[in-house]
Amino acid sequence: MKNSTPKANFESFSFSEDILSAIKAMGFKKPTDIQLKTIPAVLEGKDVLARADTGSGKTAAFVLPLLDNLSNQNVYLRRGRDERFDSSKRAVSNCVQVLVLVPTRELAIQATEVFKQFSANIYPEIRCQSVYGGVKIKPQLLELRGGTDILVATPGRLLDLIEGNAIKFNQIKTLVIDEVDRMTQGDFQEEIEQISKLLPNKRQNLMFTATFPDSITPLVREVMNDPEIINMDELSNDLGIEQRVITVNYHQKNDLLAHLLQENDWEQVLIFCSAKRTCDNLIKKLEERNIKAVSMHSNKEQSTRSEALKDFKAKNIRILVATDVAARGLDIKQLPCVINYDLPREANDYIHRVGRTGRAGQKGLVISLISHHEYPHFAVIEGYNALNLKREVIAGFEVDEVAPPLPRKSPKKKKPKLSKKQKEQLGTRN
Image 1 (cartoon, rainbow, N blue to C red):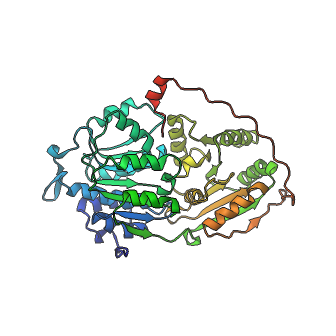
Image 2: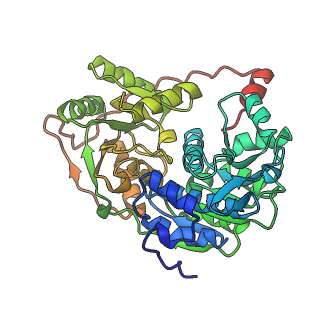
Image 3: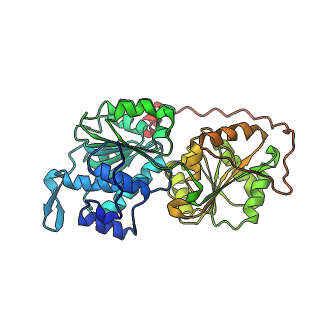
């Protein structure tokens, strides 16, 4: 099926005046490419499978038409130019109309914020709630009792709530699955299949992904019905993102990183590590070199993670060190530099890391620091993403021809077991 014919501007879509006013109030000038191709299909009620790079505006590509659809599905009472909320049609107890599934807590919070930002300027009475693991489940149970129009959830916590009879799905009109390529990893796919079987058969399905790996095919077949496929161009230099690869001996990686941070005037830097322990160790190594940084990973309390992200967005923190939990969907405006201290385990996660910089047409820089043992894996990443990047060497940090021995890893500490009561309070899934 061919993609919908792109429109020239937001006024060309069949949006209500309130939606257009909200778009203007949010400072949106014209639709991005993914919005041009996705919005018409969503407004028409079609199933959509869309691939677009991070930072392309894909969240608004489904938020705007879904808010407009909600206003037209007997949820609101139209009275001339005023659109007042019809209290008799408000969300029914424990019921949901739009379900958005995301892989991480941070993405759940961010997507909810986008819905609320637009709805506040359109229909303030629309209810939007996010649920995710890592926090107590009881407040989420209580809040859901009144029902919600839009629910943004991580699959694991949603299943916990379903087991507690906190949610009814009989009124769901639309299912959105964001970051589909991540949602086919680990337990996510099985959880999504469990959830989809509980939903009404007659519904609209929207899927968004940064890559099209073969692993998403079974989920697409299971969930979608004759979707319109929208495949934007792969990651390209036209996005204004410069990608550099610097080779370095493993034992010199910390010194090289410190050198780069001290010699360049980047206003902010997001550094990616492959493990939580590496994040914490790197923070200590940077502090030894009088470089202040903050870490963010899944072992941190949700309040600590939220505070770190808030401070980073507000530019109160210059350097944030994170695992891939921060790579998915986080919208940090005008972030000039991303550094891959470690390479991502999955080749398609490279795109998500790259997408943290150069957002909304801004210039960006991505630097990958690779040692001998990482050469083969980076070649896989290049092949997967159709890249061919020059290897650089920094003076004073020349790489040896033969790999020096890697340091021996210290044994991992065993995690303390949670009591049954703690598991019930926190939930054991994301």
